[in-house]
Length: 180
Image 1 (cartoon, rainbow, N blue to C red):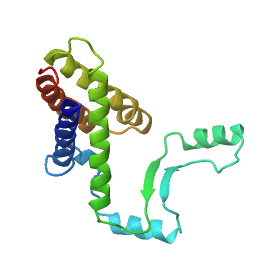
Image 2: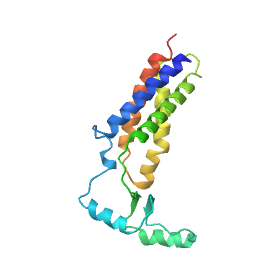
Image 3: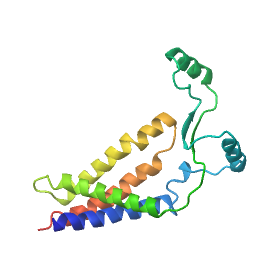
Image 4: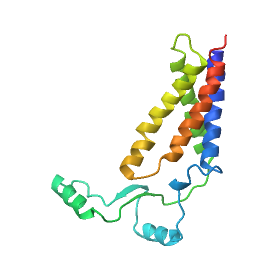
């Protein structure tokens, strides 16, 4: 149990630290939060619409629309601009709760990976790295990559996250877990 707890703590910290580096000064995720000089006008326009907090896919058929109405909207929208807008009425820069929740998720992910790896008889360094990459790849392929397909976004930052953070975690666990 001590091995799992220490492995989880260190692996969770590795994941958390990489995510910090990845989303701050490394530039890995710059394409996901681009600047526009028209941001003030856009925010004023959105605020004037009386939107509720949420994410909006535009254009979108109203709730209760028929299949024919959805089809017509898709045909009419073809070749025209579209957007996905996440709107919040109030900006909140308080990071304490978000970082705490992020660390808790990272620890849980590390714990689950260790739980899986510990089920493998004869666990070795190579298997730990492969297992970590496999878990990271599952996360990448089923969430950010699928979003990139459907919403025509760039998922390269998430792919870099997969390789770096899960490679580091796999190397740590490959060193730590097989030890007697």
